[in-house]
Each structure stands twice: as structure tokens, then as C-alpha cells.
Image 1 (tube, rainbow, N blue to C red):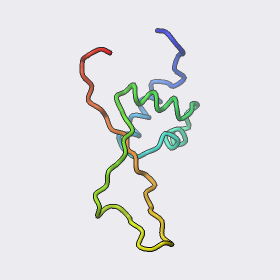
Image 2 (image 1 turned 180 degrees about the vertical axis):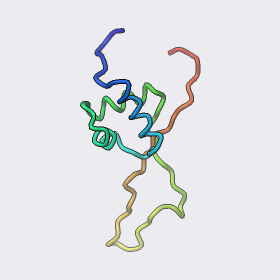
Image 3 (image 1 turned 90 degrees about the horizontal axis):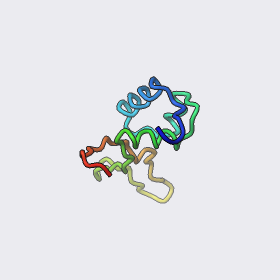
Length: 93
């Protein structure tokens, strides 16, 4: 195998995948903080992409969106991205 060796253990890999399945709207920073991982957000992002996940914008139906009714209110959408497992084909790139 070429390149850098992974710092994360198999158990940490399993824990990341389990956490994303339980909370698809979790951020990479929250994953690192929740599991006390010795890596940064970018390492978690690369691992999840290798596992077939993508970080997609969550679309909400109009009735589910919180919309401000006056100038004093602000739109409250803390989590507007979710992790999605992509279907992969057997074609090599």
C-alpha cells in the first residue's frame, strides 16, 4: 500500500460509520469531538468518502422550513447537510 498509513484504528472506523448511520446530519467536527479522535475533520471526510458517503444539502419541504416573519427573526437551519451512502458501480476509475 502506498501513501500515509491511517492513524485511525478499525474500531474507530466502525464507530465513525455507526455514528453517521445513527445521525446522518452530524458534522465532521462533531464526529471528531464525540469520538475523541486524534485526527482532524479532513481525515474523517476522506474516510467517509472512501466508504461511499457524500455530504449533501438537505432539502426541506416548504412547510418544514422555518421562515422569518419579520426583520428581527432569522432563519434557523443549523443542520442543512446530511451524509448519504452512494451507490457505487463496479466500474474502475
